[in-house]
Length: 186
Image (cartoon, rainbow, N blue to C red; front, side, top):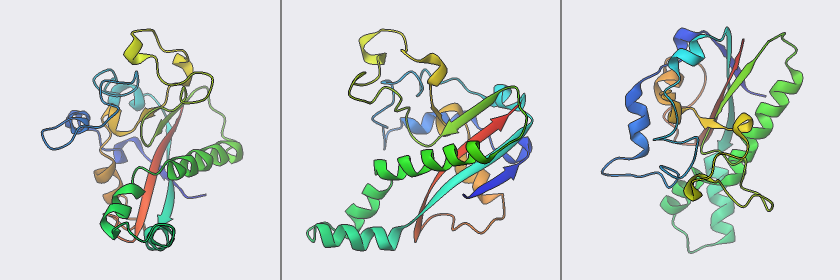
């Protein structure tokens, strides 16, 4: 289970990161449609600074193997289209969630409180019973204590954080796709 212990100073915050979710060239489909995405997501630098121990958890996906598999399944898809799909593939998001769950099961540190920042939008309500987030209906969040904020949604510059760690991770990604989560303990 890939994890890297960090100091708070290693986590690069920048309020501009929240604006990347909506720009002239790109608008995330979750922007303005989720309680945990901008413009609702809070800037969390002060909140995260109150925690004592930090771990960057990640999942690494071999992009070349993924492309070969997808081209075999659908020979008409271009490599570029497959590469773009890899970044939004829900299976990869599930992989990260599984890695974080394993990390928490195996981590026996004493802590009063934990905060987990994920990759991508909150999917807590995307199931057969709840049928999606309540944001667009104007109703309050069903599960405020289970909300999952994306690192970028709360102002973490994931690229700068990873680049400055000097670890053996291909960054920017070319042959591998990564999903990152941040686990914070108080």
